[in-house]
Length: 241
Image (tube, rainbow, N blue to C red):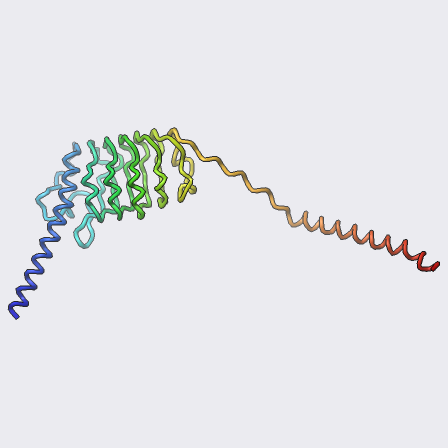
């Protein structure tokens, strides 16, 4: 019995250590972001890497397993650069860093966030290309990158998005037409150097029911006149026969 209790205690301790290491790894990733940002309002001052996990930090949300699911310091007057370490937050669903002064490129490692649902980086000063790795994010539904200085083409692999806004950048090339791109309005792409796809011509008008009925009536009338004429011309021949 004592041996069983000892084994259970060791398992509990091991599980605690695993969760603590995982929490610290996510805290390290967030701390790397903090170290690359200028925070004039000290909104991130409680991002303390010595904490067991980052779940109590400013604008950080976690799930029941103390894993980060949301980063939301939007409109916080932050400047600096994003970091590749963000790609370590495997359960992240919302990355909301909009309306700041964040510069540099969007890290390719964002494409590792396979649970990401929303990526909002609009109203910053980001440069470089939209990473093609974002096409790996099959759960991504909201992508708003408008009002930056992004260049290059729109990745064709972004086919699962419901809401897209890349307006007011310096993008070029053709706007994709595959997947959900066929549903987006031109306003999502305005103020770039993009080539809009040709609009499909409208289908030919279908004949109205009234016209069809009139046509059928006219044909019927003509057939009736012909039949009567045949009978009239045939009658004398039958009488004199």
